Image 1 (cartoon, rainbow, N blue to C red):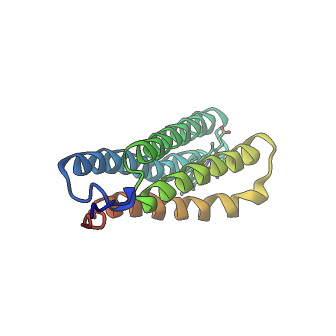
Image 2: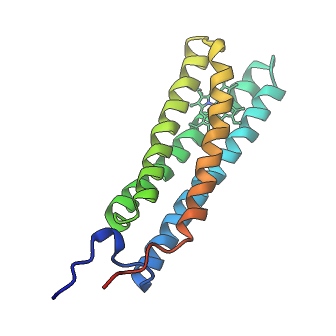
Length: 150
Ligand code: HEM
């Protein structure tokens, strides 16, 4: 009787699987770094609070950093869908990270453009949650999938 391994259990620890997971680890690791740096850029514009030009420049850096983080997370999600489909944990995690980052950027935009300062207590804890997800993903990718059956 021939065994039909499901896609979820297929490549397990093959060389191709390890290479795909390494790329995913690099993309999500860089996303985590970009998110960490968002805290630094925020610290810079808060330090220059009251000095319009300096604060505005750092807010722009913070906005660009957000785009970089979104781009890296989206690439990781696409990579996981195409190359690591059988790893539902990584696919779902990377999609969730991308969606939450877009939400974070949208909330940031509302704070800056529409003066919705009341959203700052949502923006900052969400950034901490994002950091946790972005660190969990590369650590999780380091674990090989279930061994192939049959
Ligand atoms: C600990 C981390 C973070 C802190 C403390 C923080 C803080 C802030 C604050 C206070 C503002 C409003 C600035 C103002 O009122 O002038 C803001 C805006 C913004 N934040 Fe964050 N943020 C953090 C992380 C992130 C992350 C991870 C993203 C990623 C998407 C992000 C994206 C944005 C964007 C796009 C804006 C609007 C910038 C603009 O429209 O020019 N932030 N952030």
